[in-house]
Length: 448
Image (tube, rainbow, N blue to C red; front, side, top):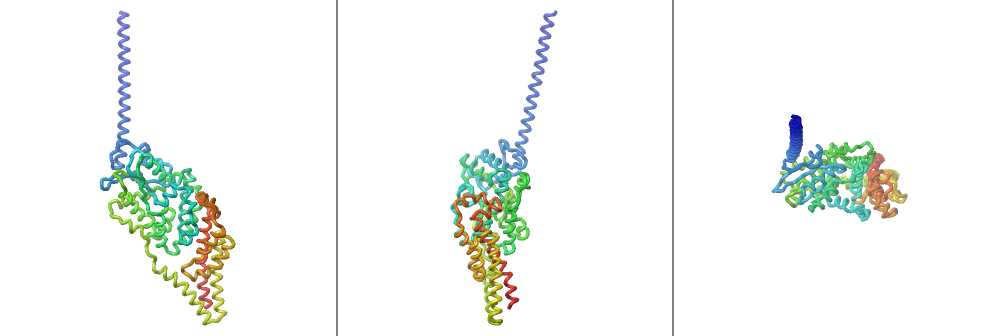
C-alpha cells in the first residue's frame, strides 16, 4: 500500500541515516583514538629522552629542544638540565616553558656574581674606577672581558635578541613561579686569571690579536649557525686556536667550569631543580656527575711559573750589566751607543703603541719617556704609566660609562670610548715596550 510503503521508505531513510551517523561516530572515535595514540607516543618519546615520567609533552616539541633537555638525580633531588645557546631566541623560549611547567624549588643559572650584576644592573659601568683597574694590573683582563662580551652581543644584535636572553628568561621565570635563584658558574675573573697565569708570552700575544679579530664582520653568521654554537662554549669557540696548541687552556676554560657547574648544581638547595647552562657544558656535567669535586681547588689561582720571575728580574739585570760593562770596556762612546739603542727601541716602539691606541699627545710623550726606565724595573710597566696619564688628561665622562655597552659593539667604538681607549693605551704601550726590549737587546750586544 502506498501509505505503508511511504512509512517503510521513511524508516529505511532513517535506518540509512542512523547507519551513516553511527559510522560517522565510529570514524570520529577512530580519528580521536588515532590522535590519542599519536599523542601518547609523543609523550612516551619525550619520557624516553628524559628518562623521567612526564604527564604531558613540552609544547616546544622541536627535535633540537628535546635533545637539549636532560634529567639527572642525586641524593633524592631531581634536576632538569637544559642546554642552551647564549644568543638564541629558541633557547630562551625553551627555558621559560620548562621552568613554568616544572615549577622547581630552585633554578640554577650559568652565571657568576659579576655576570649576574651585569644582567640585573645595567648602570654598573657608571661605577667603574679605571684608575683602580690599572693600579691592580687588571687592564688586560677587563679589556678581554669586554671583547668577549662584545662578540656575544654583536651576534645577539644581528639576530635581534638580548645577549644572555635565556639567562634573563630563567631569572624572570624563576621569580614568576616562586623559585629560588642559584648562581652556578665560577667568577669570570678567576677563570681568565687562571688562564692568563698558565699562558706563555706568545700565547698571550695570540690571544690578544685573536680577540681583536673577533671584532670583525658578523654579517655572514646566520641564526642556524648560532644554533650550532650550542655544541660549544662561547669562550671555547673564540679561543679555539689557542686551545688546540695548549690543552691546559681548554682544561681551564671548559673542563674546570664543567666540574664547577656540576658541583654547584648538585649541591643547590631544594629537591626539584632546573639548571640552565650552555649546551657545550652538558656532556662535561654528565661526565663528572658522579665524581667528587673540590671547589676550593678550582677557585685558587695557580702559582706563577718560576721562569717568569727569572726573566722578569734577570732580563733587566742583564741589560743593565751589559750597559755598565760597555762603559767600562768600550768607553763613553760604546756606552752611549748602547744606551741610545735601549732608549730608542723602547721609547719609540712604546710610543708607537700609544699612537695605535690613539692616545693623547701627552700620553704618547709619557710612554716614550717612561718605557726605557720601566723596562728596567720589573715592578712597573710602561703601559701603566701611559694609562694613568691618559686617564688624567682624558678623564672618562658619564656618557662614556653609559655608552660603554653599545660602543664595544664596534672596533671604532672601542677606540672612541674613553674607558676602552685607556685600556687599549695600557695594552698597546706594554706590547710596544716589550717588543722594544727584544729589539734593543741584540743591538746592545752587538755594540758591546
